Image (cartoon, rainbow, N blue to C red; front, top):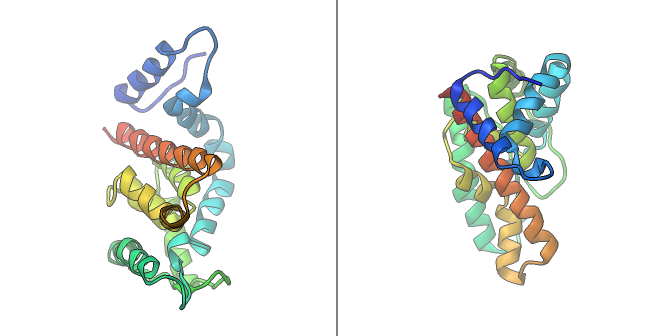
Length: 202
């Protein structure tokens, strides 16, 4: 069944994914097709729910939950080095401040901040929103996902920010097979989200 996408660049990327299929279709090798299908099939009928789900990542954003006093100074330093510039960028770009806390107990973000971020999501064209949804879900962070699709960071930087805590633990204690698989999925999803966005905007 034919599908309509915004431009030739994305169409060619999807066609290449189909050409690479062998006897059986392997969905995990067709990231552009899957993202396009999500935009076409789900966004038109589920957009309010999708926008609300994206905004929930801002309410509990990974970059807002910092190491508690007594945890390794190196972890605290890394969080500040990778996450503070992203929060500064959100402030400069959208004029909003996200509160941070130490530990895992939930904090309430300012209503004005969430309202402005909701406006930014609502203003996104559907194909960009599809890339953003994927990036936010993969990273567990509204801020990281937004920075990725707006070009503030690339996929490698998004992965480093999203996986900062787990990467720090791996450096100290080693990585098991399940963690390796999970991190590979996160890296691939962030790379795909950025590529999809770039193709859509080309």
